[in-house]
Image (tube, rainbow over all chains, first blue to last red; front, side, top):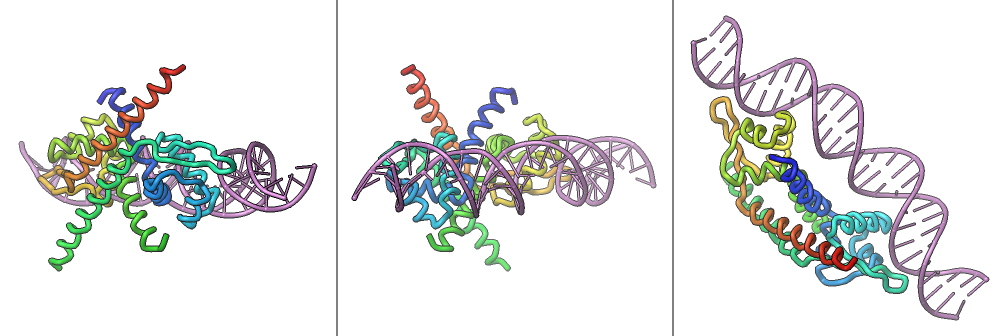
Length: 108
Length: 108
DNA sequence: TCACTATGTGATGGCATACTCACGCATCGG
DNA sequence: CCGATGCGTGAGTATGCCATCACATAGTGA
């Protein structure tokens, strides 16, 4: 593996890691309904506001989100709808995994 | 969000996090060619052997991989082919992101 | 039995992340 | 101008992750 390939893996890994957290995952899913402000996201998650703000910053930096100002509020949106397809892959993988586990358990 | 939903997000996030690392990503891609032993993976990556071993353990625990013993060697395989579809989504998202960045840069 | 190979794992140091609290800044309504 | 609201961010702490070294284990072949 040359340096260029390593760099590419790093980019991909960073993108993935930006979603590898329960709160961030929940935010992405919530944003699939369209643009939302921080206050609504916070209320929906039932999490600490400053913490949500930090997670939003992480995803913003990773390029997953976009935002715009609307008066007092900051409105966040998903940057690439592709991300949702990504998430459906995860759900499917999780389902397959659990079914596989269930089969193993059934043999006990 | 109730506790059950949070648990679900945690499961998904753990699955995602298990891939959110350059080395682990490279391993998954390498394993898409089929079963490989630790020695070959290590050589292909050019990484520290014990480090590779640890990353394999992480993915094993996350349910991404399976392994079997073959003499001295431990052979690892991808558990769910679905993971590859997942990765192609990441690649596509990264491409979209970079194209988007390129458009923004073009306006300078 | 003895060297050698392939692999996993405990210990450790360094670094990044997550969360909370407190505060500051910008904006809006009056 | 003032209070209230929405939001970001510095500081501090706790926790976890990562890479590395050293060592232990298991199988292999002579």
